[in-house]
Length: 211
Image (tube, rainbow, N blue to C red):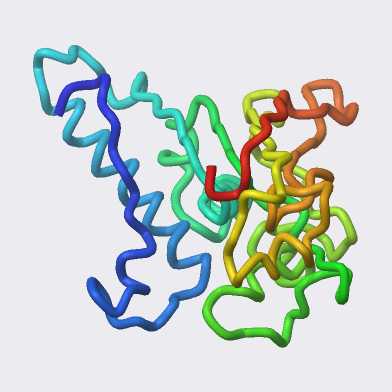
């Protein structure tokens, strides 16, 4: 495998009735799969003599959409998930349309934790605090165990073009959203090198949750 390559973590395939069992594993399972993928990629890259890369120097960038960003954060932040050597290989993270602080709707402030069908409760803040290894809080967009300044958040601002559920999703999320994730919930922050809170770099684009 060449060092400069793109590898897709198709974590959701096993939750598909076409490729898997149609049962949705917990997000911790997907995060452990990311850990294994990084270590497998390191093995393949470092085994190629043309790359001239030692395992200690191997680095990856993680690029994630929506829940994929939470999979990345669970892997990076929760010491009970994955391995230290895989986490040390991550140089930067890019997220697009990720509900870093959960999903809020007009009718209910936050997705209820008891709403367990599919993976919906993964966006409940109490559930998120658990897999992100954070104390229970109304703000689970806090990044720990990884530099927040090395995460870039791309935030969608076009709610109207998201037509899932006949437009019900965008109506419920409200105008200040990408049709599913509210703008205020799509960014991260966390303690910097001096312990002071650091806001992750971000940009806003007139795109819906689906891009």
